Length: 637
Image (cartoon, rainbow, N blue to C red; front, side):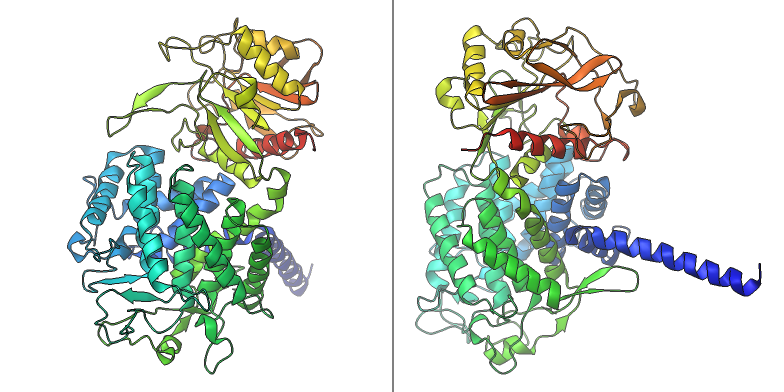
């Protein structure tokens, strides 16, 4: 073969390989594509990692991608990066509490996540330092946090995102229930002081003293409605509502504020592009421009508000139009297939030196850049929310209830307070169900927990009921066994259309005689056995192959189930998946309802979050398959 022909064939082969790489990249969700860019631009191997609020926005985006994919690389990036900044004693590099800069609290959200996953005390100490800052943060007389010590008496919309989501998550994690009174006060005060009654928009900042040159001498507010400032406020509000107790007396007021916010945002959306302007109410006035970060933040807040059931579905249409506009105007792709976000204003502030007067001309004078961290982080978060929308309708306004009566193991946390910890929605560690719960959320279901014995009345609100690994005395001295009355209540609920998921355990780790009073009603009697024993990290010993055409597992092909109790089946019980001649996964149709059962807790984080299993073991896919199938079994009304 001639040299030129060899070169030609090699060139064509290279093009084909490059083309295949690009096609694969382009079939990935935008959240993953932008996360790849972010992890390249702000590498976890860089010596230039700094504790900044900009990085905090990016980190939160990458965390959300991790929850959606169960891929280790995202978690590892966050841990590697943060570990460069948190010393073994919990000291935070390049952080000074005495600055009382509320921007510096934001990255603590990722520290909290790492603590909840890894239970490493250094993360707790770092988070506690940031909580101490908030306890000492200077305040205006009405109780709102100053934005910074060097900006006395000033509250900025930005500050709500910088401080309150961390504050809320810390309070939720470490049992500071009364902190939500203070958190709600911050939002209510800021909206009351900065909201313009005519437009519904929020001014960028408020000077309680009315002494700043930029401050209105009667109201104290700054002169204009800056897009990203309102974006920060909206993102903060939907994130705090994630953590706030549903029965908190101020929750209703925050929901009213969120709906007012969303209405104003929708009103000032550019109808042609779907985007929002740098100065929101000035539209096409001279020099004004469509701005990327604010548009991403509004899409995130609206889409998440809809998913949380805190905003009417109408706002999903607004978010979809905005997201389409972002992709059309601001996203570009380089020769290596990496995507980039253009059109983000680098900064906008008030006061300082040189002095920023908050004028219209000032907001248009700041530089517009590509791949600004604030915009990139907001884009990743917005993309994740948009990628969650397609399946929401399947389970919208339906409830999945997790048993915490039969499984009620408790231990004390670092504060000394006892809490239920094994297989719980709020658990982020190996034993938690946080990723499993996130998948249910993707299908529009509300997560709930049943702490009482099951009855017809308390099961009625649930479309799906999950029982996991009921206690035995070695786990809980007060173990509660399945009684005939419990079994009858659950079976009657299934017969009327309930969908029951049972994740039991194997012999030595489970009680069978009493629990089978329930399971035998469905023809799914657990054997007192254990198969798929695994030595150490020889994960292949626990591998289960899934044949093509499986009715439940539509995408997972190879999964990992360690130490399984199997089934003896009688009608209406049927096998879903066999292993070593035994029934490993089984189901039954019972009246109008459905039961799916496995003899292992299985879907806890240790086997979903990507940190332990090898990539060929597709438990995360299996969990998605199971949730999709369970939702399909809910009878249509």
